[in-house]
Length: 280
Image 1 (tube, helix red, strand yellow):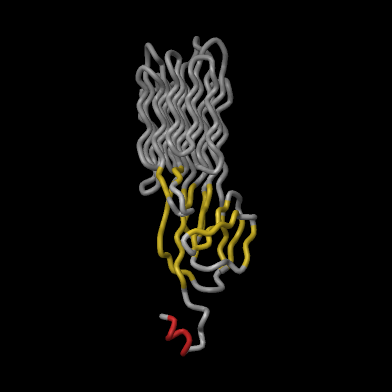
Image 2 (cartoon, helix red, strand yellow; image 1 turned 60 degrees about the vertical axis):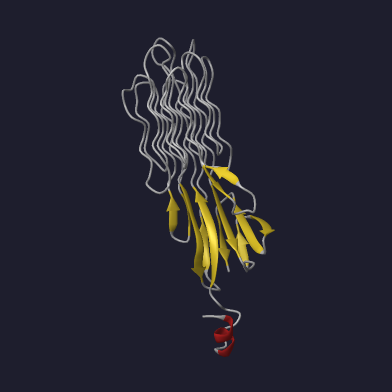
């Protein structure tokens, strides 16, 4: 229905309109380790699932629940896998939380992007969800005993080698008017050498010897870094919370959840960093 038809039919200004959006789920936590006599480097957490769409038609007066997933907790010191992130959703579309990193001798968990496997696991990384993310990397044995990197929205997690596996890179979006990268995987931890770098898009770095994994950046859906190992037990980094961003050609009638409201290119942009709702 165009504007003339709407006016003639008495429906103006209730003309359907289209929005763009991105939905980023919570990233997963990196795994924790025990110590060098029992376990070795841990896998990084997988990024939260990343989904985007353009020109999605909505009706005036329509109301939607917006769910923003939290990041998964890093695995506690003592040899624990990282926890999966939580799902995010809008308009009946759901992005899946990232898969937790695997501790020593354990596979990474599946999710939006898969978690990296721990050292000596002999397993591939966790599986990512098609259209949302990528698989995690695998760990390695002697001499570095590194964990694999968590998968990112734009690339698989790196396999461990001399260093811990790098977190997979995320995906960039310019929905806010500036290019921002989201959903990077967490780096794997290591016994020797250096922990894996976090993936672009908020992924936390893996821990080197005697270091915890780094936390992911909030509201990016990044995965937390896997911990290193050494003389003590170390914890994995926490995953980053997700985000939902909606770009519309008109202002919303109401919102809950206190989204940040900005404008760019004649559009109104709603950035939800906590769950809420929006009515047009």
